[in-house]
Image 1 (spheres, rainbow, N blue to C red):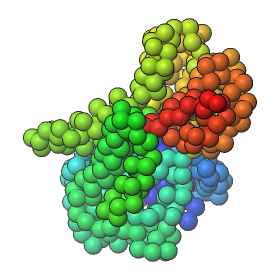
Image 2 (tube, rainbow, N blue to C red):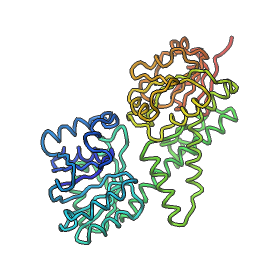
Image 3 (cartoon, rainbow, N blue to C red):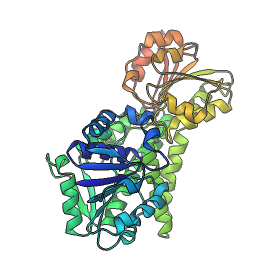
Length: 430
């Protein structure tokens, strides 16, 4: 099929690469906010496994063409929108262009996270002679290629047989293992996407509240988590306490869901609480540091492992580390930070600072001369450190684990103090 793909999001790049890979003729029009000359250099695109290689393959084989203006596009059979919420107006401009509006039988696939009902609105602008479907973005950053080409599910919002048929054919190569489409009306698909992330965020925030209570009561939250997860009505997914979640899509979806509630005349006290709890949890490690030193933290040096909002990505959008850094710097704390991928994005945001040193290769460099180690992002390279080496590097011999990935008793047996989220252990004295 001839596909015109518009956008510069991760979902746009992944769809362009994957659709071209299976033989579709894809013309990709990046948004003017991030043209290909700039987009091709960003860290998050290169850090996504397999993605850049497949983009280059499509460009080399001619199944993928990057264009700079809509007038350069051939008449498409499918228009695929993958834009950020802030780019809604650009979607409207595109679908009203005569190149599309004057044609017949184009299928508009809205892969963007816009307000509920926007697919119908765009369809009205494009014209009744065309068809539209809502295909909400369900990619997972850090494994975008796999989640697009081997999806567990796809939400497909369509109100006629033509849109469903064309979408199924377009994505047929990625739907052969089992039936992955969940078909429903367009508005239902748009709301379902937001509702799913709202539920996941609620589970995380609830577990973080329980972890705070466990801290107060002197209970190891891991026992509570295991007991809750073993209940078949609950399960273990998204039941891990931590120092807050981030990411561009997850955070935006929550705010979008809250906006939908307000625009519908309904105030969601639950969503407000979920978001408030998450913002508070981003300061958890700072509060533990403050408590340990009784507020005397000015001049201390903290080593931080991890800046990306999740392992496998170079992005720091709404990442917990940003809130943590602001709190530390406000109290005169120096930071030595290691991350294998997100350091360029961090420097692009905060610039060069005297109270920030960064490292990308050896994590232990960040610990040299530091008082405390804070684990913020659970990259695999951090899971099994040399604890005796860390003990010799950290002046205060304190580990603050923001993801509960370490065994508290084992860390304590190596002579370090351990403080996690609802977990703690101190070295044993004989």
